[in-house]
Length: 405
Ligand SMILES: Cc1cc2nc3c(=O)[nH]c(=O)nc-3n(C[C@H](O)[C@H](O)[C@H](O)COP(=O)(O)OP(=O)(O)OC[C@H]3O[C@@H](n4cnc5c(N)ncnc54)[C@H](O)[C@@H]3O)c2cc1C
Image (cartoon, rainbow, N blue to C red):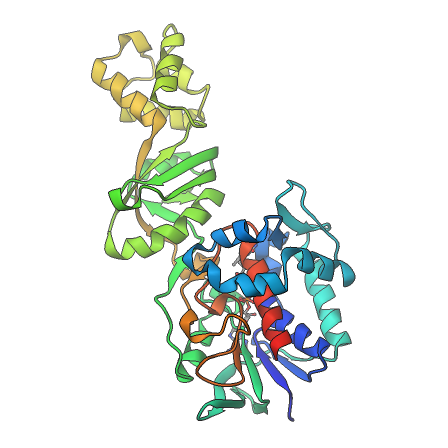
């Protein structure tokens, strides 16, 4: 069977590439190795699917770091507003309850998957599930099809939209990197991003499941002092997780390779500085220090702050030695922690690194190595922050790729 386009991978990027190409009259085959389409899309945002956000383009791009420039064309061609209008047209209205993060009004990712599936069918996109692409068929510098674990399919255009290698149980085992390499592409170093981090400090275990709202984290290394993240922090049995960690982790995991231990500091006291801390303690000097601390942090953390400053739970501020006072005030402003590892690709919501952007034309998403070969979504060396950035990029790059075919 001859097609105009074969898309490998049915995530947000692949689905949108298939839709955009089919809307332009192309005969499209969509290949997916799992039994259903859009498995990661379904899991996104804890099943609620934070599909995009309301930031304007220039600000939006900043959240992708230095590679953000590469996706300007994709985001201009298919913006967050375009995505929301498209979803509305296919029966999925969206809203931004906090004015920033955009969700389907149902807060259920299945609504999106079902609507996309119906739209693909309406456009006569042929969908094959439970099938794995194993090789891109190409002659010198032109693609002509895809070999799979079942049979070969032929088309003059092939889109690799196989995602990264995080959360492999959702089908993303890094196949796209091998397919790309076999076509002469290079892959930049891959790191797990957006995942829980492990700390050397074992006291975190005693705070397990406690959430600290609006924690601020900074890397305590001279060269990286500017790296900072703010958001909710959750303690785990061996480290940290939560929205602030998801954003912070993508900066930390590459550093873990060169620094076995990464010192960080955390403000766990709603932004109190040393002066604020001192004032609070003095104002409550008739109470035990522990009691005072429970006004600003959970009691488990108050206990740990006391222990780390050599203060008993019965001691009042005025009974403390100078060294304990000094230590406590410093801890309340910036608590030191040491990152020593992470949960690995198994728990990485996003992969940092991927197909080298220098080898892709950002205006079309076509390979500069092989004609008719396209890439979109997470398989490329692009990753954004937490907050709908990644899905929007995937849809936009898929769209750009589909319309250019
Ligand atoms: C738990 C979780 C929550 C997330 N929440 C959000 C969120 O709320 N907002 C946000 O913006 N981002 C979120 N992300 C990130 C976002 O989901 C991804 O960045 C995005 O889905 C990637 O889309 P993609 O189309 O590039 O690839 P994917 O969605 O990963 O799709 C790739 C598809 O290719 C298939 N495939 C792979 N190899 C082959 C092969 N050889 N043959 C055939 N098929 C193949 C896979 O099975 C998969 O279905 C989340 C990620 C996770 C894991």
